[in-house]
Figure 1: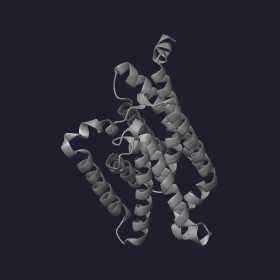
Figure 2 (figure 1 turned 30 degrees about the vertical axis):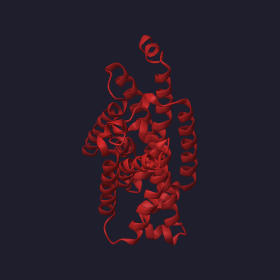
Figure 3 (figure 1 turned 60 degrees about the horizontal axis):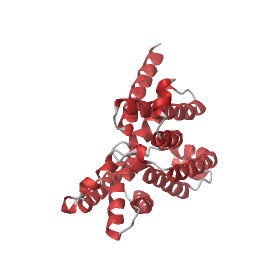
Length: 272
């Protein structure tokens, strides 16, 4: 078809499509685990902490701020997990405090001298700027995530149902939470420059939330989440190309539309 050949005649669009075909199933898989374990606020806080990671990279003179973002994201996740385990406050309160403070610190540092405009692209991301070497890195992360999911899914599911029961069955809850949090941090920080701080959590949560609306078992839940993520990503990228809009927000709008359709579908099924 003519529109396909037009869409793929540029190398940057081919790279973007390849990245979408890796990122979306990655988010689809990770999103189900995040939703199951009620970590939506956690992944959102990680995304906002990218400001501070980037700011530290600028202060330390790191040529690639992506490295400082990943390192800070891991440290942020570990510290947040530790405080959550030691604090009597609710998880969402602790996470909100961390998210607000880390965002403010990063913005203050990056905006000194009115230079924030140089870093504003990270708010919405730019999937069209991804390079082949970065696509390979995403592919490695996807493989690692699939392996982690295969090994740890049943344990994470038990933890999401009842932490005390999971501990009684010998599941190393604290260790598994730590590994899972670090994995989320790495994926979020690596993806954020192409997806954007403002919308990365939506791309993590919406496919899984949509799948949960229509799935009747766990197998369907994960399958639908990946399919919805890939469909939204590819179609959103195509639409953004022809409408000349930002790819990330376009994908989110499409994912949100699918969520509301599945929510309506679930309501109709329940009434029948």
